[in-house]
Length: 380
Image (tube, rainbow, N blue to C red):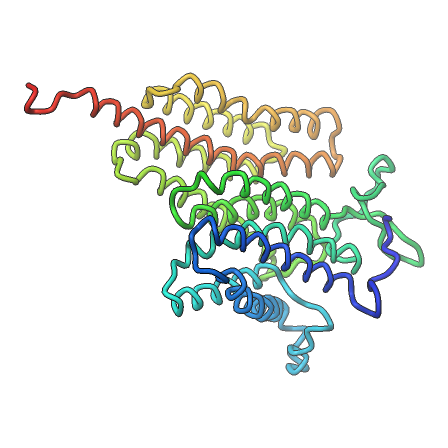
Protein backbone atom coordinates (compact mmCIF):
# COMPACT_ATOMS: atom_id res chain seq x y z
CA UNK A 1 0.00 0.00 0.00
CA UNK A 2 2.89 2.41 0.52
CA UNK A 3 3.51 2.20 -3.26
CA UNK A 4 0.46 2.59 -5.57
CA UNK A 5 0.03 -0.33 -7.94
CA UNK A 6 -0.88 1.95 -10.85
CA UNK A 7 -1.69 5.56 -11.73
CA UNK A 8 -4.69 4.42 -13.76
CA UNK A 9 -7.93 2.65 -12.84
CA UNK A 10 -9.45 0.94 -15.90
CA UNK A 11 -9.12 1.63 -19.63
CA UNK A 12 -6.38 4.16 -18.94
CA UNK A 13 -8.54 6.42 -16.78
CA UNK A 14 -6.24 8.12 -14.22
CA UNK A 15 -7.08 7.59 -10.56
CA UNK A 16 -6.54 11.32 -10.04
CA UNK A 17 -9.30 12.23 -12.50
CA UNK A 18 -11.62 9.55 -11.17
CA UNK A 19 -11.25 10.78 -7.58
CA UNK A 20 -11.82 14.40 -8.59
CA UNK A 21 -15.02 13.42 -10.38
CA UNK A 22 -16.12 11.37 -7.35
CA UNK A 23 -15.46 14.36 -5.10
CA UNK A 24 -17.46 16.66 -7.37
CA UNK A 25 -20.41 14.23 -7.41
CA UNK A 26 -20.39 14.07 -3.60
CA UNK A 27 -20.27 17.87 -3.43
CA UNK A 28 -23.21 18.18 -5.84
CA UNK A 29 -25.26 15.67 -3.83
CA UNK A 30 -24.61 17.52 -0.57
CA UNK A 31 -25.36 20.86 -2.21
CA UNK A 32 -28.70 19.43 -3.31
CA UNK A 33 -29.53 18.63 0.30
CA UNK A 34 -28.55 22.14 1.39
CA UNK A 35 -30.55 23.66 -1.47
CA UNK A 36 -33.77 22.48 0.15
CA UNK A 37 -32.71 23.60 3.64
CA UNK A 38 -31.79 27.08 2.43
CA UNK A 39 -35.03 27.39 0.41
CA UNK A 40 -33.21 28.03 -2.86
CA UNK A 41 -34.91 27.46 -6.24
CA UNK A 42 -35.08 23.87 -7.45
CA UNK A 43 -32.03 22.63 -9.40
CA UNK A 44 -29.87 25.52 -8.16
CA UNK A 45 -27.20 23.06 -7.02
CA UNK A 46 -27.05 21.36 -10.41
CA UNK A 47 -27.11 24.63 -12.35
CA UNK A 48 -24.34 26.24 -10.33
CA UNK A 49 -22.22 23.10 -10.68
CA UNK A 50 -22.24 23.56 -14.47
CA UNK A 51 -20.75 27.02 -13.90
CA UNK A 52 -18.45 26.49 -10.91
CA UNK A 53 -16.66 23.34 -12.12
CA UNK A 54 -15.42 24.78 -15.46
CA UNK A 55 -14.47 28.06 -13.77
CA UNK A 56 -12.67 26.10 -11.06
CA UNK A 57 -10.65 24.12 -13.63
CA UNK A 58 -9.64 27.28 -15.46
CA UNK A 59 -8.75 29.01 -12.20
CA UNK A 60 -6.73 26.02 -11.00
CA UNK A 61 -4.70 26.00 -14.20
CA UNK A 62 -4.15 29.76 -14.33
CA UNK A 63 -3.02 29.86 -10.69
CA UNK A 64 -0.50 27.08 -11.34
CA UNK A 65 0.78 28.72 -14.52
CA UNK A 66 1.21 32.11 -12.88
CA UNK A 67 3.10 30.60 -9.96
CA UNK A 68 5.44 28.58 -12.20
CA UNK A 69 5.60 30.66 -15.38
CA UNK A 70 9.27 29.78 -15.97
CA UNK A 71 8.13 26.27 -16.91
CA UNK A 72 5.87 27.62 -19.67
CA UNK A 73 7.79 30.68 -20.88
CA UNK A 74 9.65 28.84 -23.65
CA UNK A 75 6.46 27.23 -24.99
CA UNK A 76 3.39 29.29 -23.99
CA UNK A 77 1.07 26.96 -25.90
CA UNK A 78 1.83 24.28 -23.28
CA UNK A 79 -0.40 26.28 -20.92
CA UNK A 80 -3.29 24.52 -22.65
CA UNK A 81 -1.85 21.02 -22.07
CA UNK A 82 -3.72 20.52 -18.81
CA UNK A 83 -3.73 16.73 -19.27
CA UNK A 84 0.01 16.80 -18.56
CA UNK A 85 -0.73 17.95 -15.01
CA UNK A 86 -0.37 21.23 -13.21
CA UNK A 87 -3.36 22.55 -11.26
CA UNK A 88 -3.66 24.22 -7.84
CA UNK A 89 -6.55 23.95 -5.40
CA UNK A 90 -6.49 27.61 -4.37
CA UNK A 91 -6.84 28.57 -8.03
CA UNK A 92 -9.84 26.24 -8.27
CA UNK A 93 -11.41 27.90 -5.22
CA UNK A 94 -10.85 31.40 -6.60
CA UNK A 95 -12.09 30.47 -10.07
CA UNK A 96 -15.11 28.64 -8.68
CA UNK A 97 -15.94 31.59 -6.42
CA UNK A 98 -15.85 33.97 -9.39
CA UNK A 99 -18.15 31.64 -11.32
CA UNK A 100 -20.56 31.41 -8.37
CA UNK A 101 -20.58 35.20 -8.01
CA UNK A 102 -21.44 35.65 -11.70
CA UNK A 103 -24.18 33.02 -11.43
CA UNK A 104 -25.59 34.76 -8.34
CA UNK A 105 -25.70 38.11 -10.15
CA UNK A 106 -27.46 36.63 -13.17
CA UNK A 107 -30.02 34.71 -11.09
CA UNK A 108 -30.39 37.54 -8.54
CA UNK A 109 -29.52 35.23 -5.65
CA UNK A 110 -27.32 35.82 -2.62
CA UNK A 111 -23.72 34.85 -3.36
CA UNK A 112 -23.06 34.17 0.33
CA UNK A 113 -26.08 31.85 0.55
CA UNK A 114 -24.88 29.97 -2.53
CA UNK A 115 -21.40 29.71 -1.02
CA UNK A 116 -22.83 28.27 2.20
CA UNK A 117 -24.77 25.75 0.12
CA UNK A 118 -21.75 24.32 -1.67
CA UNK A 119 -18.87 24.83 0.76
CA UNK A 120 -19.28 21.70 2.97
CA UNK A 121 -19.26 19.54 -0.15
CA UNK A 122 -16.20 21.38 -1.45
CA UNK A 123 -14.20 20.40 1.62
CA UNK A 124 -15.35 16.78 1.34
CA UNK A 125 -14.37 16.81 -2.35
CA UNK A 126 -10.92 18.07 -1.35
CA UNK A 127 -10.57 15.25 1.16
CA UNK A 128 -11.39 12.71 -1.54
CA UNK A 129 -9.37 14.35 -4.31
CA UNK A 130 -6.18 14.47 -2.22
CA UNK A 131 -5.88 10.70 -2.63
CA UNK A 132 -5.15 11.35 -6.29
CA UNK A 133 -1.74 12.63 -5.12
CA UNK A 134 -1.10 9.18 -3.65
CA UNK A 135 -1.60 7.44 -7.00
CA UNK A 136 0.48 10.10 -8.78
CA UNK A 137 3.22 9.76 -6.13
CA UNK A 138 3.30 13.52 -5.56
CA UNK A 139 2.62 16.09 -2.81
CA UNK A 140 4.80 14.20 -0.35
CA UNK A 141 6.90 15.58 2.49
CA UNK A 142 10.42 15.15 3.91
CA UNK A 143 12.22 11.84 4.23
CA UNK A 144 11.26 9.68 7.22
CA UNK A 145 14.44 8.42 8.89
CA UNK A 146 12.89 6.87 12.01
CA UNK A 147 11.84 3.25 11.24
CA UNK A 148 9.07 3.53 13.86
CA UNK A 149 7.20 5.91 11.53
CA UNK A 150 7.88 4.10 8.25
CA UNK A 151 4.42 2.70 7.59
CA UNK A 152 1.42 3.57 5.43
CA UNK A 153 -0.53 5.87 5.52
CA UNK A 154 1.77 7.86 7.78
CA UNK A 155 4.38 7.60 5.07
CA UNK A 156 4.72 6.61 1.41
CA UNK A 157 7.62 5.19 -0.58
CA UNK A 158 8.97 7.36 -3.38
CA UNK A 159 11.54 6.25 -6.02
CA UNK A 160 15.05 7.48 -5.25
CA UNK A 161 18.51 6.40 -6.44
CA UNK A 162 17.36 3.11 -7.94
CA UNK A 163 15.26 2.18 -4.93
CA UNK A 164 12.61 3.66 -2.65
CA UNK A 165 12.72 5.87 0.40
CA UNK A 166 10.02 6.76 2.91
CA UNK A 167 8.51 10.24 2.85
CA UNK A 168 5.80 11.94 4.91
CA UNK A 169 2.40 11.38 3.29
CA UNK A 170 1.31 15.01 3.38
CA UNK A 171 -1.58 14.23 1.04
CA UNK A 172 -2.98 11.91 3.73
CA UNK A 173 -2.55 14.47 6.51
CA UNK A 174 -4.43 17.07 4.49
CA UNK A 175 -7.13 14.60 3.44
CA UNK A 176 -7.72 13.65 7.07
CA UNK A 177 -7.75 17.31 8.14
CA UNK A 178 -10.26 18.14 5.40
CA UNK A 179 -12.50 15.23 6.37
CA UNK A 180 -12.57 16.40 9.99
CA UNK A 181 -13.22 19.94 8.75
CA UNK A 182 -16.14 18.73 6.64
CA UNK A 183 -17.68 16.96 9.64
CA UNK A 184 -17.32 20.16 11.68
CA UNK A 185 -18.97 22.27 8.95
CA UNK A 186 -21.80 19.78 8.53
CA UNK A 187 -22.38 19.77 12.28
CA UNK A 188 -22.47 23.57 12.76
CA UNK A 189 -24.19 24.57 9.51
CA UNK A 190 -27.72 24.81 11.00
CA UNK A 191 -26.53 27.05 13.83
CA UNK A 192 -25.19 29.75 11.47
CA UNK A 193 -27.62 32.67 11.44
CA UNK A 194 -25.86 34.85 8.88
CA UNK A 195 -25.20 34.02 5.24
CA UNK A 196 -21.49 33.61 4.59
CA UNK A 197 -20.59 32.36 8.06
CA UNK A 198 -20.09 28.82 6.81
CA UNK A 199 -17.79 30.14 4.08
CA UNK A 200 -15.72 31.91 6.76
CA UNK A 201 -15.56 28.74 8.85
CA UNK A 202 -14.35 26.87 5.77
CA UNK A 203 -11.56 29.38 5.13
CA UNK A 204 -10.62 29.30 8.82
CA UNK A 205 -10.54 25.51 9.17
CA UNK A 206 -8.96 24.70 5.82
CA UNK A 207 -6.50 27.59 5.93
CA UNK A 208 -5.22 26.80 9.42
CA UNK A 209 -4.40 23.21 8.48
CA UNK A 210 -3.03 23.98 5.03
CA UNK A 211 -0.64 26.56 6.50
CA UNK A 212 1.18 23.85 8.46
CA UNK A 213 0.97 20.99 5.96
CA UNK A 214 2.12 23.12 3.03
CA UNK A 215 5.48 23.84 4.66
CA UNK A 216 6.26 20.09 4.57
CA UNK A 217 5.62 19.60 0.84
CA UNK A 218 8.53 19.22 -1.53
CA UNK A 219 6.67 20.64 -4.56
CA UNK A 220 5.16 23.87 -3.28
CA UNK A 221 4.53 26.76 -5.65
CA UNK A 222 6.79 29.63 -4.65
CA UNK A 223 6.67 33.42 -4.79
CA UNK A 224 10.33 34.23 -4.45
CA UNK A 225 11.37 32.43 -1.26
CA UNK A 226 7.81 32.19 0.10
CA UNK A 227 5.40 29.30 -0.31
CA UNK A 228 2.41 30.82 -2.06
CA UNK A 229 -0.30 28.55 -0.64
CA UNK A 230 1.10 28.72 2.88
CA UNK A 231 0.91 32.47 3.23
CA UNK A 232 -2.36 32.72 1.34
CA UNK A 233 -3.69 30.22 3.89
CA UNK A 234 -2.46 32.38 6.75
CA UNK A 235 -4.10 35.51 5.34
CA UNK A 236 -7.43 33.78 4.68
CA UNK A 237 -7.37 32.13 8.10
CA UNK A 238 -6.81 35.39 10.00
CA UNK A 239 -9.31 37.36 7.89
CA UNK A 240 -12.00 34.67 8.31
CA UNK A 241 -11.52 34.57 12.09
CA UNK A 242 -11.76 38.34 12.38
CA UNK A 243 -14.85 38.49 10.15
CA UNK A 244 -16.62 35.86 12.25
CA UNK A 245 -15.77 37.69 15.46
CA UNK A 246 -16.73 41.08 14.01
CA UNK A 247 -20.06 39.71 12.83
CA UNK A 248 -20.74 38.18 16.23
CA UNK A 249 -19.93 41.43 18.00
CA UNK A 250 -21.79 43.92 15.84
CA UNK A 251 -25.25 42.36 15.51
CA UNK A 252 -27.29 45.07 17.24
CA UNK A 253 -25.19 44.79 20.37
CA UNK A 254 -22.51 47.47 20.57
CA UNK A 255 -21.98 46.75 24.23
CA UNK A 256 -21.07 43.15 23.40
CA UNK A 257 -18.46 44.45 20.98
CA UNK A 258 -16.96 46.82 23.53
CA UNK A 259 -16.79 44.13 26.18
CA UNK A 260 -15.33 41.26 24.17
CA UNK A 261 -13.56 42.47 21.02
CA UNK A 262 -10.29 43.42 22.81
CA UNK A 263 -10.10 39.88 24.15
CA UNK A 264 -10.79 38.56 20.63
CA UNK A 265 -7.91 40.53 19.15
CA UNK A 266 -5.49 39.47 21.91
CA UNK A 267 -6.39 35.80 21.67
CA UNK A 268 -6.37 35.46 17.87
CA UNK A 269 -3.12 37.41 17.47
CA UNK A 270 -1.40 35.32 20.15
CA UNK A 271 -2.64 32.02 18.69
CA UNK A 272 -1.41 32.93 15.21
CA UNK A 273 1.95 34.04 16.62
CA UNK A 274 2.24 30.61 18.24
CA UNK A 275 2.78 29.11 14.79
CA UNK A 276 6.07 30.98 14.54
CA UNK A 277 7.36 29.97 18.01
CA UNK A 278 6.73 26.22 17.95
CA UNK A 279 9.87 25.24 19.84
CA UNK A 280 10.40 28.41 21.83
CA UNK A 281 9.40 28.32 25.50
CA UNK A 282 9.38 32.12 25.63
CA UNK A 283 6.89 32.18 22.77
CA UNK A 284 4.82 29.51 24.46
CA UNK A 285 4.72 31.42 27.75
CA UNK A 286 3.74 34.56 25.83
CA UNK A 287 0.84 32.67 24.27
CA UNK A 288 -0.35 31.23 27.58
CA UNK A 289 -0.12 34.66 29.20
CA UNK A 290 -2.18 36.17 26.39
CA UNK A 291 -4.76 33.39 26.66
CA UNK A 292 -5.04 33.93 30.40
CA UNK A 293 -5.43 37.67 29.84
CA UNK A 294 -8.22 37.04 27.31
CA UNK A 295 -9.96 34.64 29.72
CA UNK A 296 -9.75 37.12 32.59
CA UNK A 297 -11.01 39.94 30.36
CA UNK A 298 -14.07 37.90 29.41
CA UNK A 299 -14.52 36.75 33.02
CA UNK A 300 -14.59 40.34 34.27
CA UNK A 301 -16.69 41.78 31.44
CA UNK A 302 -19.23 38.99 30.85
CA UNK A 303 -21.60 37.80 33.54
CA UNK A 304 -23.40 34.88 31.89
CA UNK A 305 -21.48 31.57 32.20
CA UNK A 306 -18.36 33.44 33.24
CA UNK A 307 -16.79 30.46 35.04
CA UNK A 308 -17.24 28.36 31.90
CA UNK A 309 -15.00 30.76 29.97
CA UNK A 310 -12.38 31.00 32.68
CA UNK A 311 -12.15 27.20 32.94
CA UNK A 312 -12.42 26.13 29.31
CA UNK A 313 -9.91 28.46 27.65
CA UNK A 314 -6.87 26.97 29.45
CA UNK A 315 -8.35 23.50 28.83
CA UNK A 316 -8.39 24.17 25.09
CA UNK A 317 -4.63 24.48 25.19
CA UNK A 318 -3.97 21.29 27.16
CA UNK A 319 -3.24 19.31 23.94
CA UNK A 320 -0.78 22.05 22.98
CA UNK A 321 1.00 21.64 26.31
CA UNK A 322 1.23 17.85 25.91
CA UNK A 323 2.53 18.10 22.34
CA UNK A 324 5.06 20.73 23.36
CA UNK A 325 6.41 18.46 26.08
CA UNK A 326 6.60 15.52 23.68
CA UNK A 327 8.18 17.43 20.79
CA UNK A 328 10.71 19.42 22.80
CA UNK A 329 11.46 17.37 25.91
CA UNK A 330 10.52 13.72 25.40
CA UNK A 331 11.27 13.18 21.71
CA UNK A 332 13.41 16.17 20.69
CA UNK A 333 14.04 16.59 16.99
CA UNK A 334 11.42 14.07 15.86
CA UNK A 335 9.70 15.59 12.77
CA UNK A 336 6.42 13.80 13.39
CA UNK A 337 6.04 15.20 16.89
CA UNK A 338 6.76 18.66 15.53
CA UNK A 339 4.10 18.11 12.85
CA UNK A 340 1.58 16.93 15.41
CA UNK A 341 2.32 19.93 17.61
CA UNK A 342 1.91 22.26 14.62
CA UNK A 343 -1.46 20.72 13.70
CA UNK A 344 -2.67 21.01 17.29
CA UNK A 345 -1.76 24.70 17.22
CA UNK A 346 -3.69 24.99 13.96
CA UNK A 347 -6.75 23.29 15.45
CA UNK A 348 -6.67 25.83 18.26
CA UNK A 349 -7.43 28.68 15.85
CA UNK A 350 -10.97 27.49 14.92
CA UNK A 351 -11.61 26.30 18.49
CA UNK A 352 -10.50 29.61 19.93
CA UNK A 353 -12.70 31.49 17.48
CA UNK A 354 -15.67 29.36 18.55
CA UNK A 355 -14.85 30.06 22.23
CA UNK A 356 -14.73 33.80 21.65
CA UNK A 357 -17.99 33.81 19.68
CA UNK A 358 -19.65 32.04 22.60
CA UNK A 359 -18.34 34.77 24.87
CA UNK A 360 -19.83 37.41 22.58
CA UNK A 361 -23.21 35.67 22.66
CA UNK A 362 -23.05 35.59 26.45
CA UNK A 363 -22.33 39.32 26.48
CA UNK A 364 -25.44 39.83 24.34
CA UNK A 365 -27.42 37.75 26.83
CA UNK A 366 -26.14 39.97 29.64
CA UNK A 367 -27.34 43.09 27.85
CA UNK A 368 -30.72 41.57 26.95
CA UNK A 369 -31.25 40.49 30.57
CA UNK A 370 -30.27 43.95 31.80
CA UNK A 371 -32.71 45.60 29.41
CA UNK A 372 -35.49 43.27 30.54
CA UNK A 373 -34.83 44.11 34.20
CA UNK A 374 -34.88 47.86 33.66
CA UNK A 375 -38.37 49.30 34.21
CA UNK A 376 -40.12 51.00 31.34
CA UNK A 377 -40.55 54.81 31.70
CA UNK A 378 -44.30 54.36 32.12
CA UNK A 379 -43.71 52.10 35.11
CA UNK A 380 -41.51 54.52 37.01
